[in-house]
Image (tube, rainbow, N blue to C red; front, top):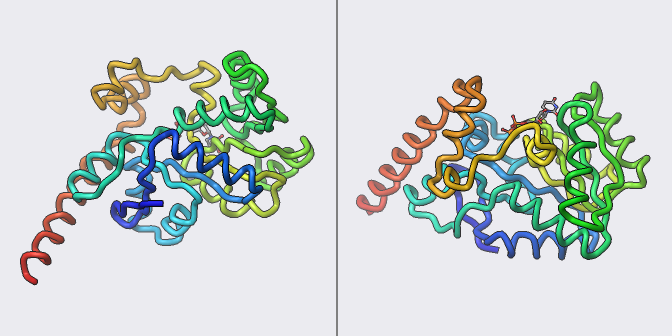
Length: 248
Ligand code: UDP
């Protein structure tokens, strides 16, 4: 599979359909792995944390979530097909799981949210089997592992604990879990439950989902300050690559 290196993070250059086909193939082969959907904030986190970067790069699929990654790819002259957001990926994957009678477990968010999400998701994807739910505020990871395995496991687990907690959980607990594929999906359960609204289509069309989120959740301001730094770094990197190429 083609990849594009964006500041040390190896993104897969895939369309939404290719990503889901690939995930389903792995599920059919019972191949264990996890999927990550880094946005610029997460790529920024990896810059000073090589262990976290290896965790991200160790994923079976690294999907470019967020228009910021696509802009950075353009700045750096790297080819990515476009955005594959965690929510869109999850939606198509659930459609396929429902068709094939495969099981899903929902892990994360505040108590009660995953159950609400499960109800909505089963309405949206008739036939979807949800083997269980567990909130994301556990003291010890083993508690979550036990909850998933006690439910009889699942082919897929949505791990929605926010970054970098969910990536650590997936890489560290994968072997202990009775599951093939773990998907790190941040705040998606809140969106599926309807407790947080997804940006209206016009915002995502214009690449302004981040702006809508900032307007709705202004406390994200501090985190989002990393965005301009991220782009500055991309420009700096492009410039230094250009210079090196010019030198030789
Ligand atoms: N969360 C959790 N356990 C924690 C911390 C956070 O389950 O210890 C949940 C939180 O309730 C929210 C999600 O993780 O549902 C993080 O959402 P956010 O939108 O901040 O994630 P992002 O995708 O931006 O990392």
